[in-house]
Image (cartoon, rainbow, N blue to C red):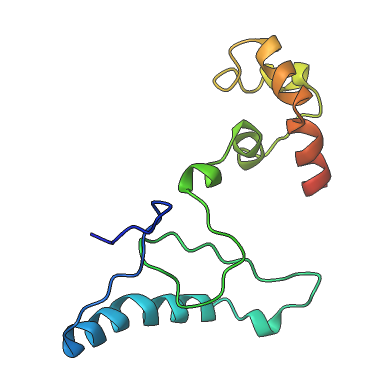
Length: 125
């Protein structure tokens, strides 16, 4: 189990035994570096940067832009609609094709008022 720092975030797990530490490093850190390298960031342009999401318990052996809990990455209802192939522009148009996502028209209106529709339309169109 990893140690926690003062903020309650996991710290790197390390072994005092050199052989155990070398094995741990190959299994965790080296595989993370290899997985990120498969994205071929050098083949990307500034307008299309490579985005890498590491979902792991280990400390990444590289500089990262952001660390967040998985809860922050869970898709919302807007992403669910988009994944199903249709992102309605209005709440009224969202309720009929997705009754399992919206219990009421007012629930859809509330989500769209908070920016769901506008932000997704702006991002994907």
